[in-house]
Image 1: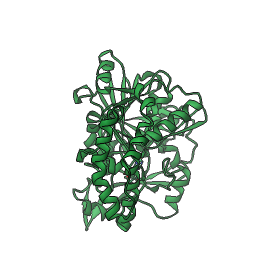
Image 2: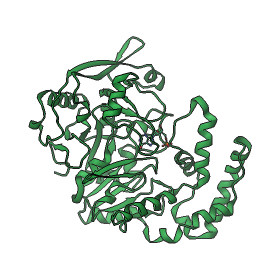
Image 3: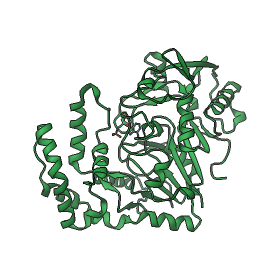
Image 4: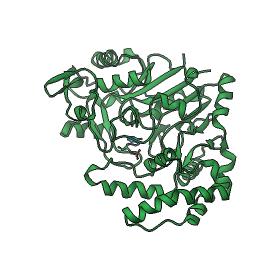
Length: 428
Ligand code: IMP
């Protein structure tokens, strides 16, 4: 009864969708446990590209039960848009289940996300503007609206009125916007209730039953370790727990049932939005990575900031998540370079730091200490075993593995589902 947690080791966009998809038909359920439609998975199957923001990537695999867990924040408009879009392409979405405890993103929170960012000016976070932060803030402030609230109009009205009591003060008095009408929000949310009702379950109970039956469950994180609200580069983070611990709280699966923690890490580093990024390349090397790796946001289309592999950053992910296996993605993007630099430590105020420093202020001043590895020019996109990789590529992978202190079990050598080198099976 394997429960496999799948997380990102950097700042997101490492290619988690590909890793889930690789497990393919051997998975029985895929759970999204945090985040909302701020995520973006691009999956290529038989040359067809699917961009998903809210739905768990497992939805594309026939037979898999896709679960939106209690830790997720759900924009219902986006949920049904995505369901309609994949159904129009012949994908069966009828198995999708949604936790009654998940919070919904009312449109006033999308508005608040955007006006808050504008208000912050130079101090902005660079959010995706999807209402994620304000909705998690409401959850913690206990004024959130949950999926289950949609099915009782009186309860819904009372909760929306309670939230707007506060929110309208903020919208009107701070941001100079019009007050939001309670009835308009009730109507907006109730419009989805009937279509949503058959999908809503006690997902924690369902997952326990599936595990008891010996089924394989994958818990797939949105965002990544360094965007985690507790363990990331706060405040330049998302508002949820994207690390392995979040998989338990966001799904209701207890820690002692987790059997494996798989981290996806890119062969270089990218980041979207603001915040420190020691290995960021602002020159043509960064542009080369961006073009070769097609590093543009799936959700916002923003060009991603690109830089070299940062070993202490990935090693931190090993530690925080208890990583048992790494999936190294996009190794092919490095093909054609004479030398590949890797950040092995930082220099901060003249002192060498082998690990991510304790404070944000130090991290913001961190200057990478690089070690350079010989590159390779051979096309590796058809490699399927380690032996198919040129010597220098193999040495690069071995060096990363030693630095991040967990085995690299899978290597991505191209965007297609089949373009992978499997060193150890993730389900063995
Ligand atoms: P939010 O999640 O929209 O509140 O944005 C907070 C930060 O997380 C911003 O820097 C976003 O760019 C970043 N972020 C959110 N989701 C993703 C993702 O799926 N990939 C990469 N960055 C993300």
